[in-house]
Amino acid sequence: MNTQTISRRRFLFAGAGVAASCALFPRSTFGQEPSRTRLILLGTKGGPSLGRIGRSNAATLILINDIPYVIDCGYGVSRQLISAGVSLDRLRYIFITHHHSDHNLEYGSLFYNSWVTGKGARVDAYGPVGLKKMTWDFFNYQKFDIDTRIVDEGRPDPRRMLFVHEFRNPGPVMNNEHVKVTSYRVQHPPIAEAYAYRFDTRDRSIVISGDTAYAPGLAGFARGADILVHEIMYLPAIEKLISQLPNAKRLRAHLMAAHSLPEDVGRIARDAGVKTLVLSHFVPGDDATITDEQWADGVRKEFSGKIVVGRDLLEI
Ligand SMILES: [Zn+2]
Ligand SMILES: [Zn+2]
Image (tube, rainbow, N blue to C red):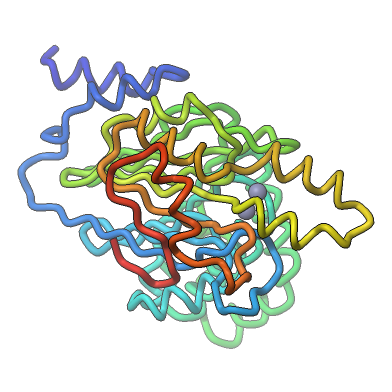
C-alpha cells in the first residue's frame, strides 16, 4: 500500500475529521493531466425574494476541465448558467447545501431545462436528506409534460437520468479523476442538515460555506484553501429593514442565529488561512445603498488577505 493509497483511505473514511484529511490527499493523486478550475458566481443574493437591484438568487458554478459543477439552485440559475457561457445540455453535477428555497427552488427546473435542451445526458445530484423526495415530487409535478414529451419528441425518460445521492452526515461526498468533494455541517438553525462543500482539484481548492452562522470549525474544514466563498449579513441594513415589522424581534434573533456578521466571516477566513475570501449570499441582497466598502470593512478588521465583494457572473 503506497502513501497515495493510505491518504485516499484516510480521506474516504475520515467522517468528522475531514478537514485534516483534505491536507492528506495530495493533488498529485489526480494524475499528470493539466487541470483548470474556474469559479463563477451565478447568483449572489441571500434570501428567496427577487431582488430589486438585480442580484440573482444563490448559485455558484465551478468549472473543472470545462465540466460544470453547480452549487445551489436558487431561482434564475438556468438563465445565469447560460449567461456564464455554459449551455444547459452540459449540466453534469448539482450540489445542494441545504433545503431553503433560495438554494433549491430551481433544482428540478435546472435539470428539466438541461433535459429539454440536450440529448439527455446523466446528471448526478448531491445534497442533504430530502433531496430524493424533492426530486420525485418535481417529476410528479411535471409528470404530464414529461410523459407527453417522451412520446411526442422521442426523448429519453428523465427519471432515469438524474441520479440523486443523499447524505445525512458530513464527510466525503464524491470524487472522480478531476475533483474530490467533501462536506462539513455548518450552523444554520433551525435547519440541522446544512452543509459547506470543499472542492479539491489539481490546481485549486475552493470552499463554499453555504448558509451559516459563525461556525469556528469551518475554518478547519477550509484550512489552506485557495478560495473561501462565504455568506455575509450586514446588520445595520437588516435592522433598518425590519424595524417596522411587527415580528422584528423574532426575525432579528433568527437572522443572528443563522447567518454571519462581517467580523465573523473575517475570523473564519483568517483562521483558515485562505488566500482569497469571496463574499456572496448577501443579506440583505437587494439594498443598493450598501457599498462594497461597507460589506468588506468589518471583514478587513479580522482578515488581511484578498477580499472580493462578489457580484453575479464574476469569475474568480
Ligand atoms: Zn440562503
Ligand atoms: Zn438558508
